Amino acid sequence: MVHILGINLPDDQLARFALTSIYGVGPHLSHRLCARFQIHDKCRVRDLTPFQTTALSSFLQSPKTALPVTQYPLAPINFIPRPPSKSIQELQAEFNAERAAQKQKRDEKLQKMGKLPVEDVKAKVGGRKAPEKKSRDPLTELRIESELRREIRENIAHQRLIGSYVGRRHAMHLPVRGQRTQTNAKTARKLNSLDRW
Amino acid sequence: MIGQVVAFNQTLNDPIKYFGTPKNMLLEFRLLSQRCSVIRNITILTAEELNSAASGPSHKTRYVLTGPSGCGKSFLLLQAVQYCLAKEWIVIYIPRAKTMVNSTTTHVYDLRTQTYLQPNYAHQTLRRILEVNSANLQTLTMRDGLSYERRSFSSGTTLAQLASAGSKDPAISSVVFETLLTELCRQSKIPVLLAVDDFQSIYNQKTTYRDPHFSAIRPYHLAIPRFILEFASGKRSFPKGAIIGALTAADPAFPVTNELMDELGVPGVHPRSPYSKRSKIFQEYARGLRNLPVPTEFSPREAASVFETWMRDNALTAPANDELFLAKYTESGGNPKAFVWQGILGTLEGAAPVVNESTSWPQLREGRI
Image (cartoon, rainbow over all chains, first blue to last red; front, side):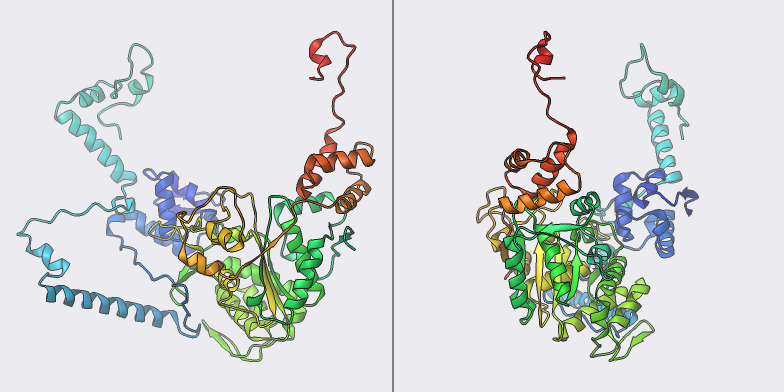
């Protein structure tokens, strides 16, 4: 039994399906999460390593503060790997050093061309934050459980505050999206309200 | 000899038991009382090619068995595996190569090889290779030592000991598998056969695996498919041996790609032009592969032997006579799979309904029940 965010994931379920039991995570997000932590499609929850479970839990607890995924190099066609005696720590250190060197080289090149490195540009745009580019990765803006419920509550409260039709319908416990009310509005009458979540 | 049905004996290092077989073949073997296959012209030809390959490097004997669905490619590959084992080769048989690219085994990025290792798959493959080839592997020793993660193997360790260590511990199995292949590429004492079914699955552009950025992982960025691609392209070579692959014609998830079809000279289902998409990387990995076309039909003699084998196993509910044999042979067009599954096993459905002319009800008269 694996516990993530207080939710118990059954051992015999596929990990990709089990993650959808988290509020706010559907099939696509679950697939993305599994890809990020190198969990293959047919992995059962009991086959998850402790490292993967910890990494998943810590990511889901605060997705915004998670470190971005590093782009590791992939072997070109005639690549000859180093001998196995070289330890992973040495290789990682070499890789980090190479990346830092590349970044420095890039910054020097930009400075020579008269363009400043990226961090300085952001500082220069007079106090006002430069508009952030929307990331294509939905995991960077992941909202789950209590945060998502709060967002929905706030959205409904906002609709009521501005006095919109949508807000009024929530307040009256009636369907919001133009459904019929002569018959059949039972779910809306039961569930629609201002303090829904 | 041609047209004779012979059984695969159950030996101690039975490849069918340890390596497994493709699914259709497994089902057929379950139905038959003994696992057997018929010797065809192409079997003799393949055996002759393997005899000449025993003295040459594997990059000179790289064949791909092609043909329409059900013509007997997988069976021929299994016959080649059994033949090489009988000739005391080292045999590495992968009956379902698509299981290494369809995201069913663990994958983990490795910075040293810059590929995604598949430790569980390597562990399982090492165990199978060891079970089938233990006698041969015990006669071969490592030339260089190996030290990895507090485990070390001195030079002079037998390959059987190395494989055994790797088959017990998935943590080191990837490195052990890589070392085993490297050592097999150095020894020229025993020929090695690498036989891969579902060969086209490792030539598809995208596997079902996804990397942390959610892009599809390519087969040459997965450790084990990369080894097979390197052997298939001749970049890695056994000093003595052969590489044989068998395509699976009818798998929509992993179709036969343009690069393979161009290299093998196979027409393919859909027409392709010089403007069709091709990958330079896969063209390089497919370079030098030779087509070994498997005949699309059984000869009447071969079909008769197969028919008699199933007849002796009491698979025919209809009376076994020449008319039935010729009817089934014609209906299937000689295609081996259709002949067995729709032809011979189709008799299990019972006799065809006979039209009753004397009944007064028209629907019954037409033979519809």
